Length: 246
Length: 252
Image 1 (cartoon, rainbow over the protein chains, first blue to last red):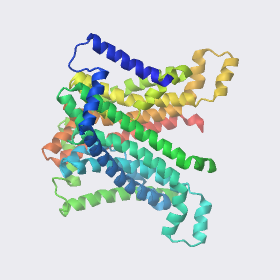
Image 2: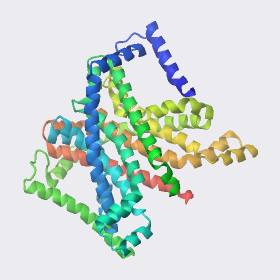
Image 3: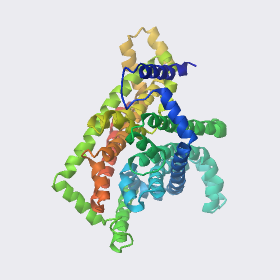
Image 4: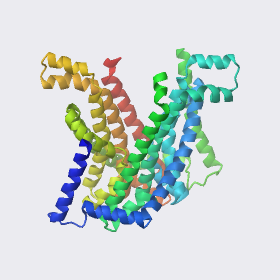
């Protein structure tokens, strides 16, 4: 209840200022107009279409990036040698800001899904790689010795011993990467790619439709918040007991 | 053991050089068109060229300057406001849920709003960087204060320590690790936003440089810019790592 006081009073104040027309501007818009613009964008399908484009980009990039990140992380975690030898290369490539790749992706793929997906994938590789590698390294030594004693091959070692032990960490990695994928997808759309929610936001700004622009901004915020809250909820549902057992 | 360690470090550098060699080979044999992927030599040649004519320094100063200005403002405001909110459990109940809603919002999504309100100006760029890198610092500061052992506060009350001492010798030291990880994240965010806003506003800087290079198909310059950005990212990461180890060494 107390949580709602601040946002509600901000909205009320904003509305009041808008109504009294103290600030006359083409660039502002009052909450009631934003609500109507949002409703219009929702009912004419443009908002949902843009959302599906952004989600497609984010999801495809997330799947590709985390598949690469998790595989490399498992490899570097299982083999001490691979982990040490890859260390410098990972540390050099990881801090490259993903947005720096926008012009490269633009050159290689042109505008469209390929560009967005490749950049999201790059951004998702690093957190999944780091978390997976750390988790694999912390698999109890006894378990690995049992595996050696049983003379398990690398596949059964991976799927019967390592994987069950690191499932909660994998979920954490995916949750982090999912948040990043949405942010990067929207950023690429705003900066360059004429697709999805980010582009809709830019178009609303350039055509001076502040109400629609704010409606899209709030919608993007809502999606980000729902994604984050949903994944946190799922994590505590699925693995709540896990952390106590460990 | 140290022999082995030194050997492995050398091996790590070898692997990195091997990757560069692979890149060079791919371009040498024309497996990828040089329009998309310039050779290693061409890339570093372009970097040298930019260094000589001074455009590299201008671009780095532009991007780095705006990034640091935005980051410093965000760090000051974030720590200050975070301290105020964190110390009062009342304020926390009222404000924290709203902050949690804003946290997952992509900072770049406010760029169109900022452009509409402020135009394509330096003020717009700095505001966006401050806005984006404020949340990590603010939320981390609040989180850090929440994690202060409550018995320390009780002890401070029994000892009747003044407010300032409580903050300086109890709250800040306990919250420092959290604040530091917030600052680290904020620095990364500020670099990203500096680059993105330059791409959109054509302000002199690395973001604009690489975008122009891509539009005119000058891939060596484009890759030189990306290498520079990578180096900046690597540099600030390494600096924060050293600072963190230095400031938090009392914890171990």
